[in-house]
Image 1 (cartoon, one colour):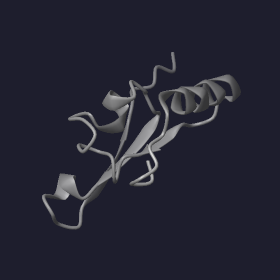
Image 2 (cartoon, helix red, strand yellow; image 1 turned 45 degrees about the vertical axis):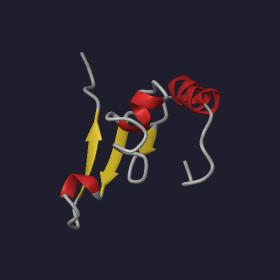
Image 3 (cartoon, rainbow, N blue to C red; image 1 turned 135 degrees about the vertical axis):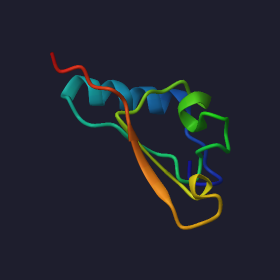
Image 4 (tube, rainbow, N blue to C red; image 1 turned 30 degrees about the vertical axis):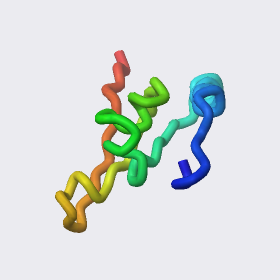
Length: 76
């Protein structure tokens, strides 16, 4: 989401499918969308599961803080 241009669910799920097919890391930038679209951010809003997500602003309570989160990988 570029503040005024929302992504469509089909686009994001298409990107997720391509990343799965070609074994590409899917990173979702939640700096703007995190906790704004839904409590779970764009991930919850669009029902999409990224490999990595970036978060900022709100995690620092207004201070200069950010974080990177990832899903659990099972490499057995």
